[in-house]
Every structure is written in structure tokens, then in C-alpha cells.
Length: 230
Image (cartoon, rainbow, N blue to C red; front, side, top):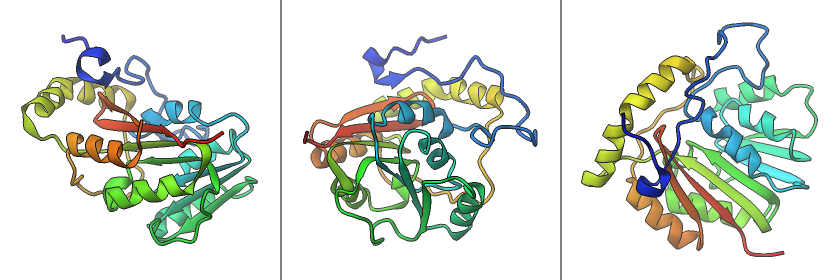
């Protein structure tokens, strides 16, 4: 079996591959670990990127609020935004009784959010539902100087090099999903990504100078950027 070396092909190693997951339907399961999928696989890295002393965090495309609830342990105030009414309703219900959590329903590109109002902005598998350049630009504008932006997204393969990586990773993706009992919450909106990995990388480097781009084995890429400032 091929070894995945991030220095050779830009991939990060698969997450959680060797661990068995408890029954996802267990009613006693911690509400911060109710299920696993290839989006949730990126949560640990996102949480590690939250700046120390973070006052305000924003989760763009928050879905059912799982990541926002996790962020509440690392930021004083967390706002989640999503344009799917069912997802926002579920997020509010699951966060009931948790201080410092706010959920906003609506279009991220048009919603009234404070400019430079957040120390940390993140988004997981949501930007392909929006105009990519407009979404990154808005996230950049919402960050306070010195703040951190993390975007995890989906892209399509285009060209021999990208397809070679996709095909080589396919067995690992299938087996990891099987072992971890991957599932997606009911009602989660789905959309095919319009941009290729190369297009994502090029646009991100133009909008976020100095951004760190990585392609991960489990069919996700990540962008990490710190806004210049103190």
C-alpha cells in the first residue's frame, strides 16, 4: 500500500483511521461526539488553531452547530450562521442552556455581522455553496487584526495530477469511513463543488496573501491564514 507523505503530494495523513467508534445511535453518547464523518475529522485541527484568549469566534455554515458547541469551550462568545432553516433550528435546540452561543439564520454574504468583530473565523464544507471569492473576502473582512481564519472545503479533481491523488486515496477513504461508521446528519444540504483544487489554491493565495493550503487524504482541503496585525 502506498504511504502518504505530505512532503511529496501535499496530503495530510488520514484522521482517526485506526480507532473504532462506539455505536452512533447510543443515546448516552456525548453531544459533542454524536457522529463522525470527514468534516468532523477536521475539527481537532480547527480547535487547536483557536487563538489563546479568543473573545469572539464565528462558524460560517455551522449546520447543526456541532463545531460551534465545541468552540464554546475555547472562545467567550461563538456565533454560528447558516442559511438552512432546519439546520439553524436544530443548532439552537442542541445549544439550549449553553451560554455564549448564538445562531443566526440567513445568507452569510448578506447578513449583518460586525466588521473586524471576530478573533477566529472558521468554515467547514460550506464555501462551495457560495461564491468562493466573495466568501473568503467577507471572512477576511470580519477578522480582527491578528485573528485566524480556517477554511475546510471540498473541491473537484481536474487534470492528471489531481486525479492521481484522488484515485490513490480512494481505498483509504472508503475503509476509514467504514471503520468509523461515517454518517451525515439528516437534512444537511449537499452541493457539488464548482472549483478544482488548483482553482481553490490560486484564488485563496490571491485573496489571502501568505495563506497555507493543504490537501487532505479524506477528500478535503484546508486554508489557514492569520490576518496581519498585532
